[in-house]
Image 1: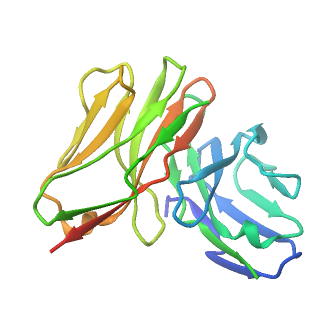
Image 2: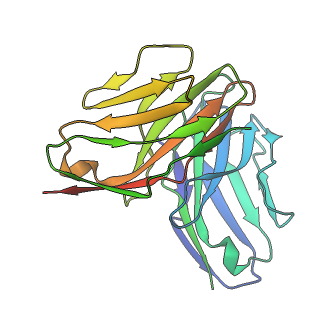
Length: 114
Length: 114
């Protein structure tokens, strides 16, 4: 199964809670991207990893959002003190790395904050 | 940074007919790529077609082709012989080579009528 996988596929939480969203990229892909897609909108860039380091985190909306990729493979997007406005689909994508322009997307995690 | 604009929130086409989806972008970069992605209700983003900015020839993929007007910063998608399975959200996107970032438009919902 060579595609990008994301877990969970759906997450319902209460306002103020902490959530973690996981992304498993395609093996060998060094670049990993997180996007947030609100209803009726296009994906909005959050953060981009090249290997283990965050090459660009300029899209993270505030300090409640944090992402890690400790071993250069799996990545976790962490949201603290969730708010209703955080409700969206969170998409992950991976690519071969710098210079590669073909992204492969996962199916996304739909986060609902009640 | 780049901006990508899709001015058609929704389009409809009769099965077997041709439809064109519009996209404009703004960039100061000289090296970039442009994409059209399809997103069905399953949320899985699927690459439809890709265009290198330095190539003058318009990309084609079977029933899908683009009209790339570099000077006008326009990148439209033409779908010929539309099929029911083409119904989905379509997103135009750009990739900045130097920053390895992707930017998406707000999408066009395509309805295909039998």
